[in-house]
Every structure is written in C-alpha cells, then in structure tokens.
Length: 149
Image (cartoon, rainbow, N blue to C red; front, side, top):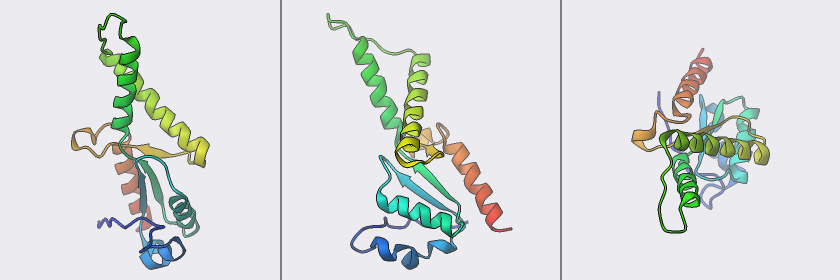
C-alpha cells in the first residue's frame, strides 16, 4: 500500500476549481481528510466529490490530546481553593473528561457539518493506540480491501 500526502485544496498553487482533476483523487483507493480544528469549505467540497466518485474517505480530527489536556486543566483550575491549594483530577475523572471532550468534538462535527463519523486521533506516537486511531486503521484497511476486489 502506498500513502500520499497531498497539499491542501484552495491554495494559490492548488485552487479548488482544478484540485480534483489535478490530483487525480477519483482514482485513489481511499482518501483521508485531516484537520486539527475544523473542516474548511475546500475539504467539505472534496468530501462531496469523493462521494460522487465513490471513493471511500475518512474525516479525521487530529490533536484531540491537546483538547483533552486543556479541558483537564480547566477542570482542575475550577477545583482550586481560594487559599491557593491546587487539586488534580483522579485517573477516572481524567478519563471521564477525555470521553466527554471527544463526544463534544464529534457532536460539533455532526451538528456543524452533518458529518456523522469523525475519527478523533492523536498523531503523537505514544498516543496512537488511544482514541479512534485503532478503528481508523482497521476501517482504512477494510476500505482498501473492498476497493481492490
């Protein structure tokens, strides 16, 4: 299997109007659209075109570990006493914040863009088996197998 990292659509060198033809994406086995915040109009247009050409694609939200850690810090700061005593969340509390944060991200993409399946991942090596990365790997391999039958 060969993976290509293509430049983003909608830039001066790769305008939206000619991106699909220029990149030949309709001939790919699968496509993975990755963002660390939100999907742009160009990425949403690309997803529509991939659907039109029946190319399986995956919407991926990267850097969820950063969002989770930010939410944990907010929670801990809200628990801090007025006398300056700092509190840390327990491991189960941290896990609950992580689960809630990921659900909020998924709900956002569903409500904002109508995307019902977003893979929340962290590209950090030590976190690759956390969150949705294992199911993303599995689903990509299955899609490639189906395309090559």
